[in-house]
Length: 109
Image 1 (tube, rainbow, N blue to C red):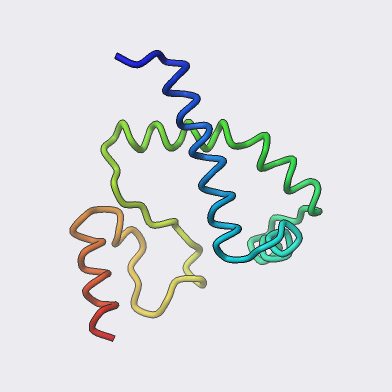
Image 2: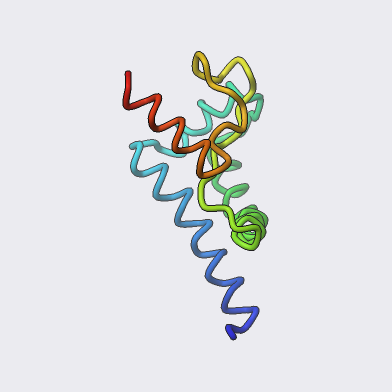
């Protein structure tokens, strides 16, 4: 069985990678992300955002660990109702069946 510190280190590294990879994949600078977060009511300077992400990755890592322990394989990020695409039902893709239905709907378009 893996040591608790090894498991924690794995999830902490993955949490940092997820945020970094998504940001780079979308070609977003931290300043761009800070501007986008204003739409969500989170006003941060670029440096404050960098500091917050660096501090908060341990909380995110713990959330990933809990989701894994619960057997989550797919996760749809909850959004305020006004940000949902037309016809989307909150929580629809939180299960494998919900994710499959959502993919089928998207493929039909």
